[in-house]
Image 1 (cartoon, rainbow, N blue to C red):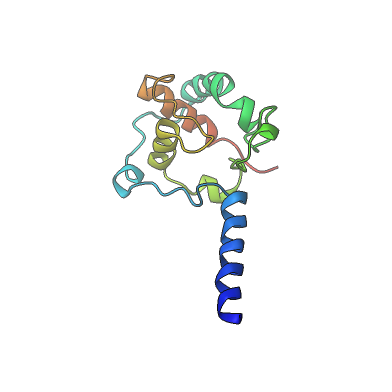
Image 2: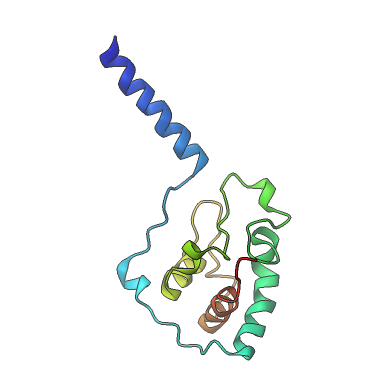
Length: 132
């Protein structure tokens, strides 16, 4: 009985973890992680990024990127808090990949944001989010 109970219990625990965190850790290919942001993170870029963020990201990720936008409550996925050190520790290339590819409830923006520099501007803006 104990030999059967342990695997069943383990499967239940893994199922609960998978339900709580759909998709698990988001792995980005090494080549994409290493892509450098070609857009200087100046005020013009950050202002452009803020406007694009407001259009494409704010409804889920919230005004300050804390994952508390009006649509966040509708999602099963826990949204990243852009102001946290763990998020900010990603490379720009990783962020670029995630915006364009999407995963689970995070849509791909490859068809909506067609200019690479616009994605880089959003990244430059998101880099300004700091925990209060």
